[in-house]
Length: 186
Image (cartoon, rainbow, N blue to C red; front, side):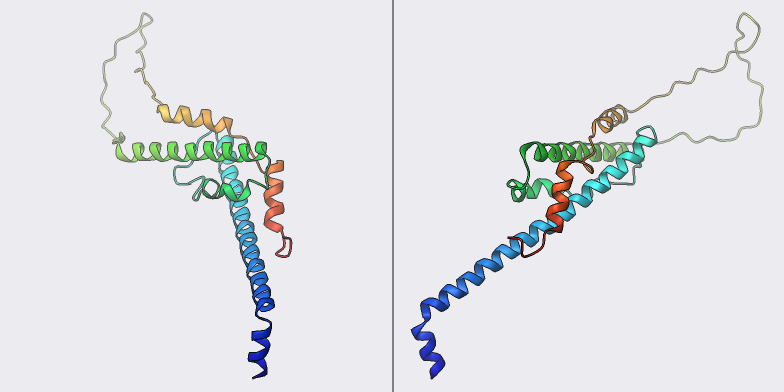
């Protein structure tokens, strides 16, 4: 009976306390989500940079089996970070994601093209003397071999050279800070 009377007499205070805890819980969940996304975005940047660095060391030859950005968390969650980043930092992260996403699509197109076309296979033939026209000196002229390069590979190398790394920039430092932020830092 005492509890019912207490609740009836202090209904406004109890509602205020419950509302306060609900607001704190909402803020905690929002900050926790932002912290997890900051970790994920930082990991995506680190992974993509690693693949681009490896490709640059190999004359911008990308492995067709590796996806630079398996997930793209930046564009779907940029609204959460508007207040945490200055315009230049947001622009540099967006530019990085844009170029790496383009590289991913180009690599995918190259992979699709290379896997859908026939490739020449060398077959050992019995040695037969083939008469080749002689040059003025009497030596046979070697056959002319023409090599082709996919336009997509040229574009891929061009864009890969323009990717600016973010790992040691102020934008990455802010992501690190957000990822390490404690729950009680409202």
